[in-house]
Image 1 (cartoon, rainbow, N blue to C red):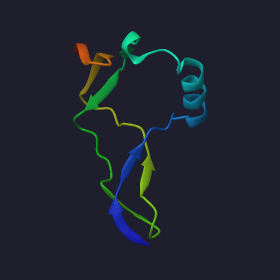
Image 2 (image 1 turned 90 degrees about the vertical axis):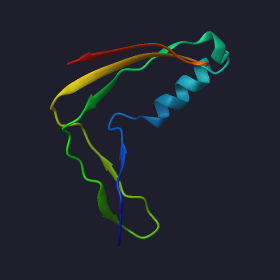
Image 3 (image 1 turned 45 degrees about the horizontal axis):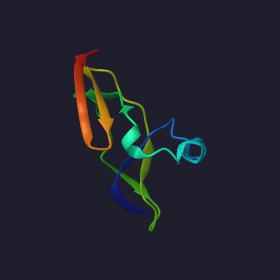
Image 4 (image 1 turned 180 degrees about the vertical axis):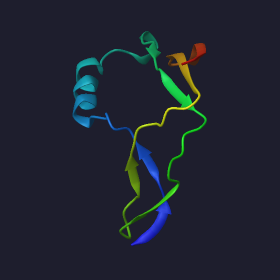
Length: 90
């Protein structure tokens, strides 16, 4: 065992669904696509920064955020970068 920096992974990530989506929509050029991506920012979240895992393996912790003062960030992304951004409380 060794002490390492913790890497957070999304609880709802599903690699099979990602692969299916890429197979279905992989022929569409990226220039034609626009994505919306909501993110939550919480400045009072206490999370572990270090943890233990076997030697040779990353220390990954799947977790949800603890509620505090929360802001939602809603960017609109294109292949050229962020084209619109909205930040609001709640």
